[in-house]
Length: 318
Ligand code: ADP
Ligand code: F6P
Image (cartoon, rainbow, N blue to C red; front, side, top):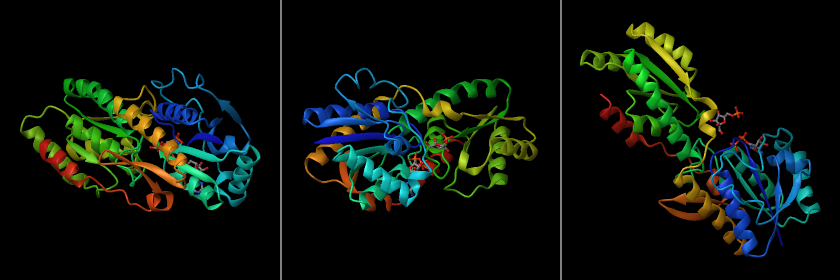
């Protein structure tokens, strides 16, 4: 029996640890393993190579993905999906493991509907996959943001300024929320909460009146650019306001212990699930437990916003 594996969409720290876990678990069960390079684009172009125990040596701690990744327009079409299923058949790949975000897992569902035996693993720094408490890469991205914000805070304090720190997350404010909570950010601007900039500036000024010498405002990219917010906040507060877009540093780096463990368990569970004959699923972590949930159900599960965390963060950062 043959298992194929690919990574798709935005890369995330811990994807390599997940690849290693899938490959080593599959080899343990005597499967042949094939690495499909560059996600669905590579599958369509038949960019496929056999993987062995050495192919995944020394990658556990590395950021990025050794299989590389892509976004493929053609794969989103029926013709593209049909061709992808045909390539899998041509190579005799019996089961496919897809590691990626929401978009990649939607693609996996399309292949399932064409009869492909498939297992998904949620890997994205955004943590925007409602079926799983956490996605691979999120914890590392938050830690990277915390580290960078510590440095930004030093200079923001010295100059008695406000600094707007923009992090990734188009529709999901989790990186801003978790990093903001961890650094005691004075304000959070995230897609889940309607922004009241006058209210935020009022709070920043009240803090200043009480003797606060600087403030950090966390901004999720889905709410707009830090440049616009800097301008408006400076106008409203009359305090010099600078901004920083943390950008792609959030997507790189060696994965945290949390992401390595998440990846290891999810990769292992993906193969166990295949061995049990239960495919068409995605592996999720809920309250510390790993489960295989049908792709349809997982993709329909709404993301629950941690309103409690938002409230506490606001309360503690007066
Ligand atoms: P992520 O997986 O990180 O969310 P994308 O949303 O860019 O990243 O998705 C990665 C790839 O998955 C896309 O380039 C496309 O080929 C495929 N994909 C995304 N959404 C769908 C969909 N609804 N149907 C089929 N394929 C999809
Ligand atoms: O992986 C998800 C994500 O990091 C989003 O938070 C961000 O908007 C997007 O990817 C950026 O992707 P690209 O690599 O296409 O610039």
